Image 1 (cartoon, one colour):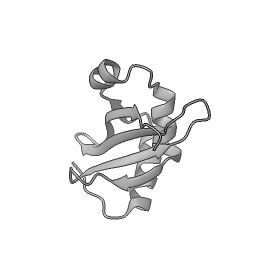
Image 2 (cartoon, one colour):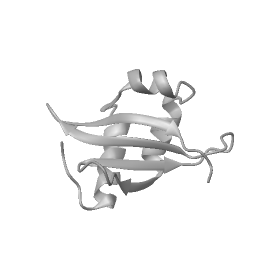
Image 3 (cartoon, one colour):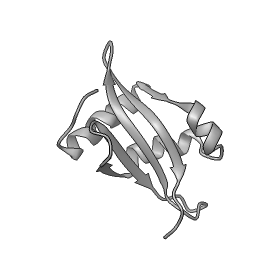
Image 4 (cartoon, one colour):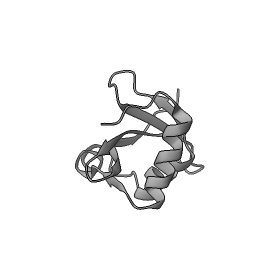
Length: 99
């Protein structure tokens, strides 16, 4: 797992990786608990969402994005892994309830 301290560098790397199709979405958890989340929403949230650090897990990050047809924000948790290069791994994605 690659740990970032700078969210703008993280965003830059994520953008390159997504556009290069270097991402993996862990659908098992998402489809089981949040079946209405779509791949296009996940990718748009990675590219255009508001980034933050996951306070519970070092090396994990959060991105949130608003879609006009949803009541809440789409929130994803992801990490950058390194195997034979870098890979964005989406751990989970769901719609946050409005507060």
